[in-house]
Image (cartoon, rainbow over all chains, first blue to last red; front, top):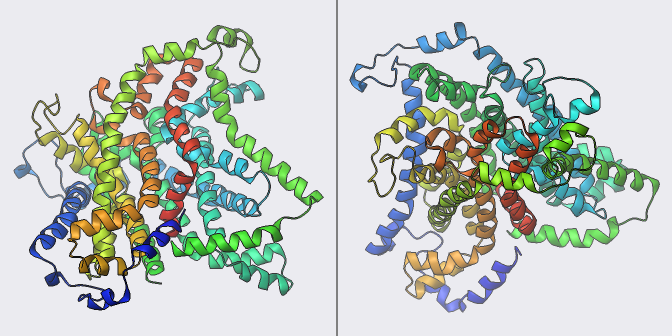
Length: 319
Length: 303
């Protein structure tokens, strides 16, 4: 399918004489465009840009600004007072759910990164061997990727429920897997990992297909085993995919929300930063400045990894 | 795009070499993969199985049993949770949001790919990064903004952007544009530049170059992105949960949370409800699997 546009494009290419008359070369500058064209180009960029800046970037800046104030969300904007870093100090010192939330976010990251991601990569390597029935295996593994995390919370409830769940029925236990604060984060992580493995498998499968087969052959001629060929030759060549998977994993762990929100709105052992921010805004207590401080922490962490991501994909782009 | 073509060629030439006769090692490999695949399917199969059994039967005999087959759970779940209405709500949000996302994103992507301005890189970065920001971090200002912006009554009975389909469509478009701009601009950059030179000789305006030259060539990428975006926006949970108030207007995915309250002790009803919610995405998955996978991998490995 991917080669079809090229074929069509060939047909559309004019005789050589025509190309020489094109005045702009590879990059026609703006003044070579007619007035209508200039208006059209401006609109094509401006309308989507306004939407993204207005609904994403300005709110992001506003979050950072609000995190330094004591606004309660109700009073007039003119009465907002600047309190400097007090909200941040409060978050760290007198807000009990903060430490568990950070721990849970880190645990989420660790579980996805140490267990789910390598397992997804391992499955991708096995499935890359062009086995018979590989279609079935692949389909089964990434089926969870099309389900929403909210729905996954419900699907796993059927296994985890204390009285009606399969896990307790099989083990003869009566653990409330979603309710017990000692175990619920692990139960949730199994469900989250279930989805993440399929996603990682898909990304690496595409990455492996892009590796030049002659590299592998050369390594095998040199007498390298399959394992060392993978770690010494194939894995380093997939560096861009590795970085993308790393960033996707970090961002997913930071944005994790739906799963815990459908279970218990992120309380009682399932605290996450994203849930705390939401509780502080739509919950009973509307503490805008305080919630914004939490949100700013999330923003800063995500921007670090987004920058790494952009640097990677754009460097790839220039090649 | 060109890389995808070369990959395919190398894959087909390599295929016969890699097919090997059945050895014990292969048998172990197949057994392992089959076990993992079945394990992965199990939670979904279990939900389907549970949804087909009557509550009475499973309450008496436990869930590790067979029998009590019925379709009543689906009938009850559909009626109690008013799925018809919520599916329609999802459609009101998903269809316009996907069309608008693809249109706006393709406009920006076209400009980025067509011209080599210095600002293009900044533009691409602004859009792509917006897609990756944690939504919750933007909630506070957006929530305030949406409760301040009035809408005429014929657009939303809330008379605000808050608690309206319009608000949800806009916020979904703003967030999803980034990914589509990224994928489409890469795809468009791979198209031969002679196309535009020829179009300019013919006196085609920028709009015609975009709509009649570039867009028809981007159909494979647009199809893959449409499949992916329908799934993502249909699955979107956070914005609908926090930017909607009226229970009747919730899309399916966010209305799931009310389902818990209504069905509360009956796991068989919960599973029927879950299967109903999953059906649209599963249909897309099985019918358009190739598009779905292509969309995801286009984003990661720039096709």
